[in-house]
Image (cartoon, rainbow, N blue to C red; front, side):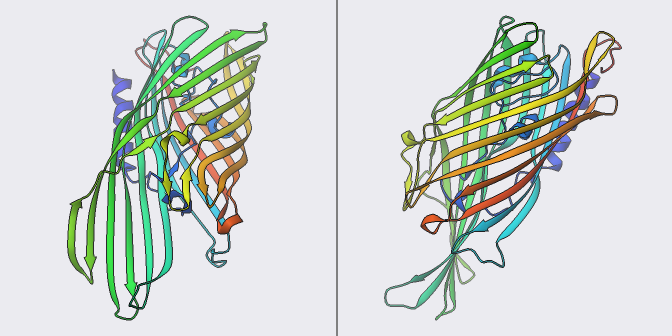
Length: 418
């Protein structure tokens, strides 16, 4: 109980200390659509493999992509993980100011704890972003019978998730799991209109609060090809779900509040059904190759806004993980690990007839320190998103993910961490 009390206290203190850590300061012009940019990163050891992980299992790493993986944790094992990310983006496009075409930020992205509750039952508690919103749009408008005006639209916020995952291994070949996530957060959009001729300003703010439970189901099948090769198959499914949204409106004219927190029509947002399949092949418990495919049925959502719409998306990724092992006292211990991966995402966003795509590569490395209780993993991702066609914006980005894990065993009598 002493170890459990320590890890829960650490989790609580970290959540309180980093309550603003999920806020996004980097500009994401396409996050104006829907509830923002949907997060594809897990901010864990998968990051160095292009976030490939539907079939991945580990005794001492917490994989979130497929909830069926939690049962693989070693008996009486627990881990606490903190994931952070630094990112820089450079923008290209006809409307991009060449003197202000890049920005960046650094933020805490994920807090997670994993527990092995019995020989066959593993569980997790994870706090991470689901979507991110951060944009600024400046345009000129002409009012009939009046002069020109300038409109500045500023959006920020996003949806976070706190999930409880559970996994049960029914046999040596089959494990199933479920992630029960509570989605919550707000998207704030403020439009400031300045009339140059009269020097009058009107600021209108729409603040939409979202909340809903969301479920992801997972299955993993594990088998041996021979004495050296193991393979896993992973399946993931999340049904279509409707986020409940409540929008309040505030309006200020020349510094005088004329509308205050007026509740307007609900702005619910439908999440698509998601299907995922992955496979992995491991040789001598040291070298692993994995590949994933994810399909999201955004067509069924029927979202349209001016020249933008949401369409069904497909994401492909593949990665390799090599970990150097050392044999000691009839057990294998990890000395270090190296990773690499590639991905291509045909995203859900279509603007001016162009469906945006994203592609890139990742490299990663990790090493245990402090007698193995602390483990450090880093991953570098270089990618491109969007296009300059149809007056759109292309994003070239570099992001670095850092994952710090604390590992130990609980409810043991004198057992030390290996």
